[in-house]
Image 1: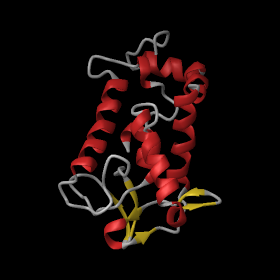
Image 2: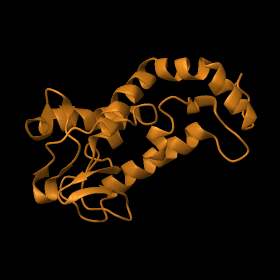
Image 3: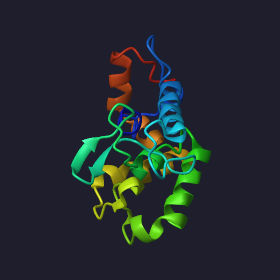
Length: 171
C-alpha cells in the first residue's frame, strides 16, 4: 500500500535521505509481496508466480488490509499491476494471467475488478477508484515517468522536499 500510493506522484528513483533509498525500499516491498505469494505458506489455491498481490481490497466478507500477517487468500490486481516500476516482468506476468486466464471472472469494460479468491471461488464485482487509479498511474510512470516528472517539477513539491532534507535538484 505504502509503496504504491505514496509514490504515485513522488518519483522514488532518485529519492533518498539518511533513512532510505526509496526506490530500493519500494522494490524490496514488492519483492516481499511477490515472494510471499509464490512461496504460498498459507496454501492458498491460485497463488503463484503469475498470481500475486496482497494489499487492502474487497474480500468475500467486506474489506480488509491483506498482507502476510492477514492472508485471506485474496489477490488484489492493483497490488501486482501497480508494481510495474519496481518489478516489470512479474507485473506483466500477473497482468497476462489475470486477463487471459481469469478475465471471464475479473475483467470488465472498466478494467479488472477489485479482488478475487480462487480458494473460495469468490470474484469481486466491484471496481474501486482507489485501486484502479494506481494501476494506470504506475503503468504510465513505468512506461514514461510522466506523472512523476510532472509532480516533481512543481515548485511546491520541490520546496517541500528541500524543507524535508531532500535535494530537489536530485529528487
